[in-house]
Image (tube, one colour):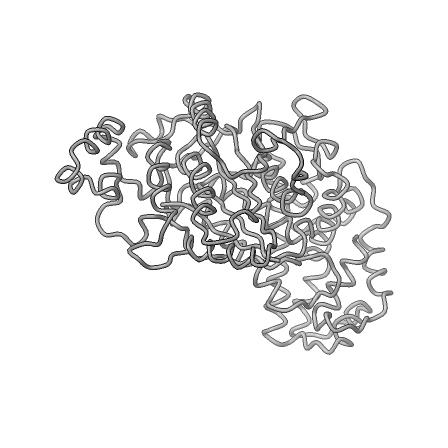
Length: 486
């Protein structure tokens, strides 16, 4: 089965990073997931970082299963398009609201409609370039997205149409397909796209729309910055307006029909301060935040665990999930939703990444040009028929190292500089390389692992080489290390 996910705007793109890490750790199930990013700004730094991580995930995972029954890198993550979907991507001229809605033609042919349009949108809003997003003006984006989401661009199928066709194919013969959307409701692009794109996408399906289960993570305000630093970049969002914009967005959502059956409202009582804020483009690269991690966990819950209510229930609107913490100003494992399912997977993957980067990869890299006598290497690499001197093997091993590094860096980023104290892992243990092996047993806050780093190396060496059809080459070693660190 293939499910679909929309990341809408900068905050939605930031949530893709922890989502990819959850997929790698085994917390996103086995089903293929099609991803579509929605943004007018194709050069957004947050978007670029997440796309690069998805490509790295795909490089590690490969097209065929090679890690056996290891939980790691199970689902295929398929980008619907290498570029974000935008209604302006193939249109000529300046991407303004006037240009998109044909203001000049409207004035010549529809006087009353023109009067209404000019009453609703003043000249500044109508002439604002939206090449870098809607700059905190969701009313502009909502008008554009509702019109654009119902058809292709200039008569040609675009990524959104291809996603619609995939939903139609997935719902054939009465099967259910899940569609999840992530975005903020206090800015421009996310607040405009969350209420408009999923409902337009589903309503315009030729068949099967009743079998699409739609959920969404609505991100409430969780960061702030110095708005005066952006004054020379034209119109931009202002953190002082975030609460008011959130209220306006929620009122709009209440008054307009929605296809959502399940909504996760996620915010923060203490906002992260962004030192280097930007309107858009490559300079917009924000630190990772707990709220984005929770949005990814919401997607995991919806895609893996959530089931629609019984048809006999007479509900009023979508189910709404609200999270609470055990302690003020802290976030611990006891606060993680579905802790029993999520904690073991993240803990095992953290241990795997720590040991792979620190203890195993340096030896694998050396094996390209010198003999390695370690028992684990002989049994799970050489006896598996792998030639460590080949470029293919070294690229596979280094790609795994790069992904593990990105995961550990994300954990460090997540634990430092936010609005509250996170106590999930001891991030200082891998803040600097090389790591200290003595820190390995206590990586996970509140737990002490049963083995030291040295003992894990010995345990991997002691495992027999397995032979099975879904294990190949380097996968024998990965499978062994994953089994020991679980």
